[in-house]
Length: 195
Image 1 (cartoon, one colour):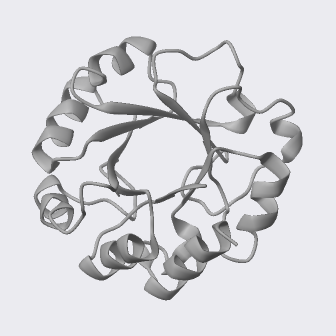
Image 2: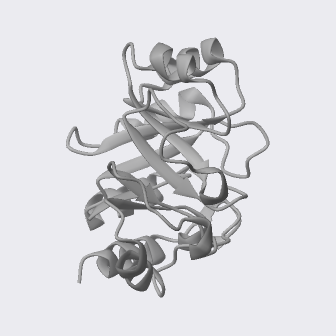
């Protein structure tokens, strides 16, 4: 099970995710997020991440030129775009980065999205800690995809069984307060994904 821990902003959180076996770590560059980090601070944290762990920059509703500039300045290897970004944004991002398209379960259609390397299916409000109704995703994607939205150490195993994703993405579910990651919850979450 591929595990991504997102919204990291401290050395302690990055170290906990890496040491517990996360496959990817994410840094949020979307304005307005409580998890917002600037490229220079992210770059310092990225220096702690071994090559085997994927590094992801998360963006939402930003011009693609800004996305690429921030991704290069921080040093992330993957660009994750939330929302209704057009396919050509993914084509632009793919020139130098891996790509993830994040979309809510309610807006997912098997044929409606192209250009990204992977999909992330999220709740309606990303980062809110809310799960989505399984009825919103009657047919899961036929490609590799990550499940996100309301995942916590105490529910992730059951949701993996229910949805059978290729991987999971957690942010608020491993926080002691909005935007504040708890290393113990990070470790517990990753352990729960791999019984």
